[in-house]
Amino acid sequence: MLATAAAVVFGLALILDLADATLGDSINGGTLIIVGLLLIALHLAGFGNRTGAGGRSWNWRRARR
Image (tube, rainbow, N blue to C red; front, top):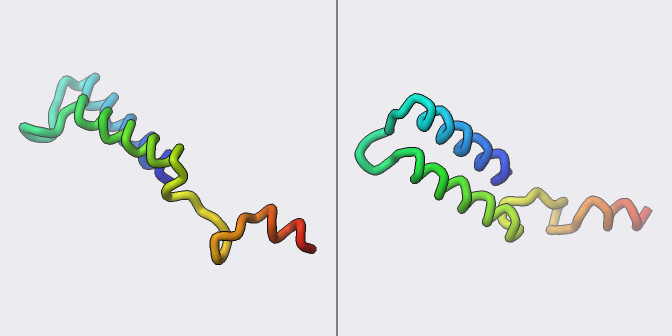
């Protein structure tokens, strides 16, 4: 989920960079790159992943059958 959000942020940053535009005084392409990198880091750290009910993974439930 966070990786998808990072891809959207990177896409927006690319569009802003190609158009040479900003979204105000403090939000520009560089700011969006930093936000995208933060989202990728959170994704790789394991935050925002979808696990099964109660934190059990799909493989654990399948192996039990």
